Length: 241
Image 1 (tube, rainbow, N blue to C red):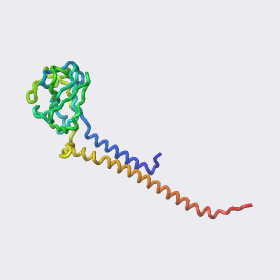
Image 2: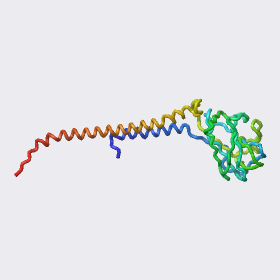
Image 3: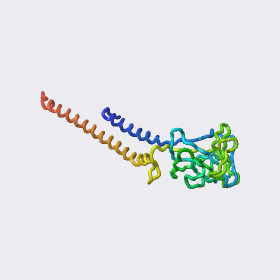
Image 4: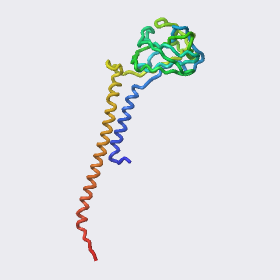
């Protein structure tokens, strides 16, 4: 049980930990989606063709890091595709294209691209390139067309029929500071990663020192009380019969 004199220190410790997690929340992930999550139909193309979705950052956000590309495979046996991340012109690659395997059937496949340090501003495209003839099937949402889904090739795009939504999503992290030229990660995140262990250690040391101080004060009070009672004991006369 925490003594009354320890409670301020304990409160400070837990508030510090809470603040650290709050700082990390600033760097939290945001999913951008134009589909409703339910594929009413599907999309597929010939070998070498691409399906793409053009994304815009949320209002008030000018810069972000792409951390995950999400692709909904609706069916068929093919699983291999090539992913392209393109600038807002739909032509220039933001990273080297890479292969992915969409093993999950009728579900989202999450492709982690955080290590690639892809920074986006304004708009960007996520495109998938077909390696098999009309295989696999990618989910397509028809209920609320957004006019953001395309087919074709980088730099030469056509809107998907009826402006329907190909089920590709983006997960981003808001960037509020400059990016480190050494690590490619946000400077604020670098500082947080470096200093959080030390801040935690400092809190732990503070708690230990506070406990020792409380213990020392407690022992001193006990000693003072005993020294106060000692003269009284010496003046007690024991009478024996």
